[in-house]
Image: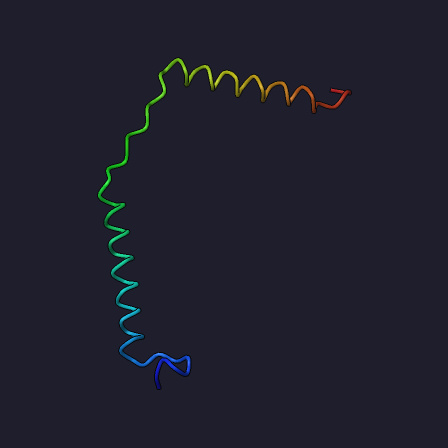
Length: 70
């Protein structure tokens, strides 16, 4: 079994596997070494404003779907 007939011998196959594992480890540790940036926390006013808009939208939808007889 050689390379000439389209098949790899055991050493070449294991070499490819080892190379793939080494590349995966390098990429994983390289990306993991960067510390993620903390997300900015919204202010209390932003949270309240967003909640108010959400409740207003919900109230409007309830009015739009209310049956005429009620």
